[in-house]
Each structure stands twice: as structure tokens, then as C-alpha cells.
Image (cartoon, rainbow, N blue to C red; front, top):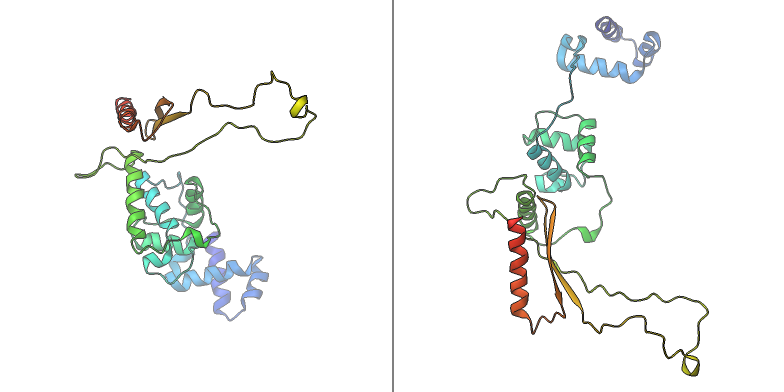
Length: 248
């Protein structure tokens, strides 16, 4: 039935009938008529026969999904393409041209990017870098993250363990000012009232290591920390945290 309807559309077009009239006679849309005629002109009469494909949707391996995500987050100019942004059509064509996938539909690409947490956003100037080695550094950092996540097996000369160092703080527990009825200072002040915050016991520092692959946090608390006086203790506790993370 499908083959007969397609052949009818092609026959009416060959007789010189306009597309709008063909769509009216065959009770279909003009876009449908144009698609059938275009497919027959491109692929011959084999396009008249329907090609149904059942089964589960095509799945992609973890390295393949990571490569698709990497290319989607990159700029088209990095792939020698005169484009400012990726569209689903251009991105899917580029993935096929570079051999990342054999074939991928626009909807399948959209779903894959959504599952990987990638969305189409408006870029700002501060999201770009003028460093000429930015692409190489970015690729190196992403490769190290892949090793840390266990998605890539480290090769010879590459690290087995990846550490990302960062410092956060200080976090001060201080009251936020507000408005309420309270006693005034001076002669009306309660002498037994305790102040809101004091650091009589000193400050505490937390050295912690998060293992992304095992989702495990190891740490060591330091009381009355002074980096200038306790440099040796700092190094010793940092080694302790690293050893705990490796053993765990």
C-alpha cells in the first residue's frame, strides 16, 4: 500500500501536476510529496519501497558517548568548519564524517546530549580563553578526569591516581544582623550576657580527599592551625589523608 501511494505521487509529478495539487488529490501534505519526489530523484525507484527497522534503539559505548559530548562542547572552528555554533544537523554530520559514529538521528543525538547533561546555551565572553594552548590543556584535563572516573585505562607513563587540589575557606559562623526589640548597650546592658561568637578555642582546618571513583571522602581535622608554624604537621596530615584514600 505504501509503495503504491508513493508511486502514485511520482506518476502525478511526472505528468506535470504541481505539488499543491498532488497533495490535494492524494490527501497528504505538500512536504510529504516533495520528500517522496526528492528521494526518488536521489535514490531511484528503490525509494518507493518502505524500509522498516524494528528492534531496540542503537546504543553507544561509554567512550563513544564521551567523544560525542566532547565534540558537542567544542567549537566548530576547532574542526575547520566555518560555523559559529553547532546545530543538530551539522553536529550529526560532523560525527559521521570524523568516524565517531556510523549513523545517528537528530532525535537520538538530542536524547544522548540530554542524558550527558549537555544543553544548548548562550555563551558569554568569559567562557572563552585567549590562551593559544587552551585546546591542548583542556583535552589533557578531560583525559585526566576520564582516568579518575575509571572510564579510560591509563597507558604507559600516565598516572594511575589523579589528585585535584583546591582550597575553600574560611567559613565563619557569624550572626546575621536583623531587627528586634533588645536591650540597649551601656548602663542597660546585661553583664551576664555572653557574646554571640568568640574563637577562644582557636580555628579548625579540615584536610579532605574525595575519591570520585569510589565516592568516598577521607579527611583529617586540625585544631589551632597555623601554616607558618605547622608546615611539617601540614605535610604529615596531607600524606595521611592521601594514604587513607589509597587504602580505601
